[in-house]
Image 1 (cartoon, rainbow, N blue to C red):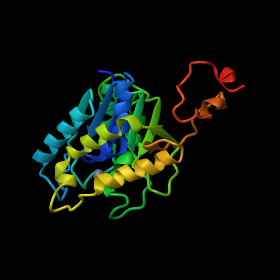
Image 2: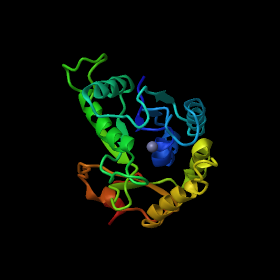
Image 3: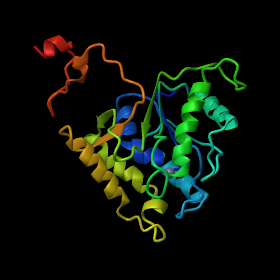
Length: 250
Ligand SMILES: [Zn+2]
């Protein structure tokens, strides 16, 4: 099964929070989309693993995903070791995505900053993706080189490499996030305004470039722009044209 864009998330809700608007937009553009959850989020203050599995399935439907997987890593115990990289590489060889997204690996550790699983998953998925193209790795499936990796769940101080206009998908995205009721509408977690905070961040990212809502992503390698005019933005609301850039920008 070939999936165009695969998001690896440490806990149910991470991929949805960091990439939900993007996934809705990509699906609408005709790409096949998937989330691979590394854990069932069983250590979360709200919800059991059974509840969270049901919630992630509901969120997958709300995001129109083509595929979901839940791996058998344990919540708060994700480690970036050889065996774990092989597991990631095996899934990469099966799904053969053109784009992989993983949590940003470099957030400062601590509460409200970089959860241990987020940091570990950022490293683990990056190395697992790399392993997928190595011939001698003891993993099944045909070798596969992922063309591009990006990172989400960026710390406030990191400027995204690029942002995606998700204004048309924001409401649908928020509805998908609400599927994770045990996390965001739970007496124990008291995170009743969390989705509002996520929306505010998307709004402030969008505002930089005159859009209502945007999601931001990071690339550790420079993106190629043989024709730098691809980086010259259209005016907000202006229809995208198929004309070559030299005709668009006299
Ligand atoms: Zn998480």
